Length: 187
Image (cartoon, rainbow, N blue to C red; front, top):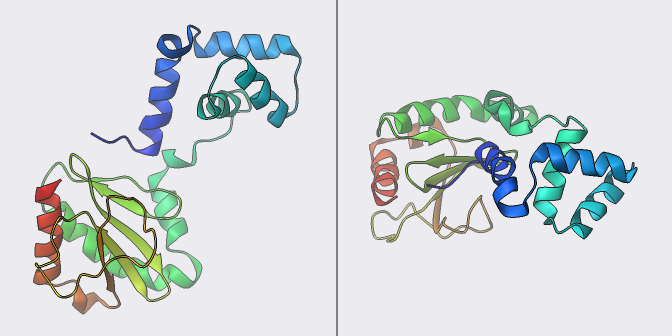
């Protein structure tokens, strides 16, 4: 099962001893002993100690008490649907209520620029765009509907092979939910 951003960060902290031989607390103490103060220099120092960029960055986040933006999914969603995208929130709410009815294993894991939806794997992404809501679907076959097109650009994941843009609430119909249901079943 794929991890969301929050779960990935937690896994990196949890796996530090196994992967590096030191706990998070030991890395923090070693960095403090180094007397390196600037964040870029701290990351560089940690990398000279054998850590990867992601591990080093996450340790720095802990030291500097950087809040994990992924902890508050509601805030991420509200931020995505602010400003020019505010009018799209009603369609998002209608869509997400129908998607959650597909099964108890549907998981909404908001990110900063889009909203991935998971079952065992990511099967759908939702991204507000100028034209409406871009829905990216992890489907194996497009013969299911003429509404599906290849994505014009990245809408969240390389697993997304097809998309449909929702311009108004009438387009959130039985056909669309059936297509989303097929992606759900495949993943």
